[in-house]
Every structure is written in C-alpha cells, then in structure tokens.
Image (tube, rainbow, N blue to C red):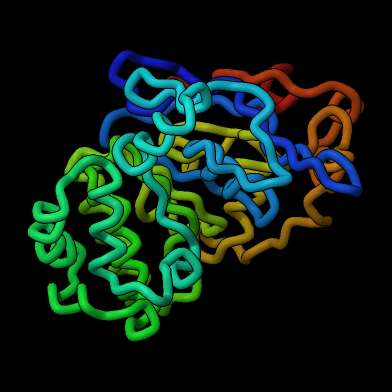
Length: 322
C-alpha cells in the first residue's frame, strides 16, 4: 500500500520480519509497504500483538533477537537502512531516523546524568564535546525542561520528564524520521497531552513522525494519515479524515466501533474473538475468523489491495467484488 513520490522521506517496500522461536516462526510483520512524506504525520494503529512495535524497530534495523528482517526495503532520504554496514547504520540512527520508546526508564542509563547521555548522542556522530555541551541547555529547553536537569539522573525525574529527555535525545541530530512507539504509555492524561504537543512541534520543524499506538482515538486527534495493522499486515491505509469517515476494511470499522465517541450515536462494540497466533496465522484473510462479513474466498485466498479512493487503500475481498 504505497504510492512512492520523490519527496517522500520514508519508503517501505515489502518489509517482512520473523521471530525464530522454539515454538515456531512468528510472522510478526508480513510484506508491509507504505510511504510517508516530508513532515508527514502517520499513525500506525491496531490491537496489541498486531506487529506495530516490531515494524517500528524494523524502520531502524533494530529488531532484537530472535527476530530477523527477512525481506524488504526501508529507504530514508534515498538510503536503504537495511543495506547499510554496521558503521553506516550506527551513524544513520539518530541522524536519519530516531526512536522514542515506550518506557524511557528502561532506555536511559540509570548511573549517568541526563546531560552525559544527551552529549553522547551528539559526540558519537562527530560533534565535538565542547559544542555538544553548549547545545544541551537549549535542547532541554526545547522539550520544556530546565537546563539544570542536565545534572540529574533518570531516577530523579518524573515519567513525563524522562519521556521529554528521550525526545530530546531523539531530535538532537534533527533526524528525517522520528518513530514514536506508544510514547504516552503509563502517563497521566495531562502529561500525555503535553508529550503529544511536543511531538507535534517536532513535526512542524520538518521531521516526519511515525506514531505507533493501539489507541485509534489518539491517532484520530493527532495524525494526518493512518495505517491500520492487523496480524502483521497493513489492511487499510489513507488520510485520517477518509479512513475515519469512510472506513473500507471490516477491521477498521470494528476498531472504530469499539471506541466511545468515534462513531456517532453508537455504543462501543467489542471485537469478537482474539488476534490470531502468528506462528500459524489463518489462511486467506487473517481477519476472517472474527469478521461478520467473511465469505468462503476469505478463508482460502489472501485479499488483493484495492484502491478505494485517492491514496486510500484496503485489502478486503468485499472491495474487490464490488
């Protein structure tokens, strides 16, 4: 589901990720394609276990063992991240693409000051130590933190402050693409809004933002385009307004119907059943065991991707038989 253009900051083509476990091969991301333009704001939404975070890690070629990227391309500013040598890849992380993780406390070093950790991000990419030290105060202030916190340790900060530090580290080198993986997890609603406002300000500075979230209501408030992910595949992709107003895939409609307030004058409706086991996913359309519209063909053959409108795509047999 991609419509590549020269001005795209990110082009993903045929990306597949597998986890090789003792129980079998987990098909976490399966032949995913999409694009994101310059300063774009793309939300990747879906239930837990749909492959969203794995996709985010793959955009940095950072899939942890026993995971492995088995095919595809991730092209950022003309460079295929998946083909870079280790030294080139290390330089690309931070300058071309950066990530804000779910839990900043697990990604920050507990025995080093905030200032030291931000400084390392810059010095590892060729910035002198003196220049890096000079930039730390303004960088902290840009994410709403006082410069004095550079001398603090992670445990001395609140959850919201730690997440702001993570964002400061991620944008220190002004990357082309910022991947934000559930960046408001475990934060109260006031701090959640502050963090999302901060990410929006980063996008306005020219960075393409990929927001990964299970909360389609949050995506509805913030992003410009939405990719709906189910069982390792993107099942629908398009502008936020089109996807929310006229969802084409039954799973997208089910997601929207499950959230209070997103579908006018309707009570929330839980999605029946459970996401499939990705070691042995269902044949055909992976959503068919939970879909009230499933036909015989859905159980046997994978649906083709159909363009249902301008830059609006979905993979469903109902669409291809209109």
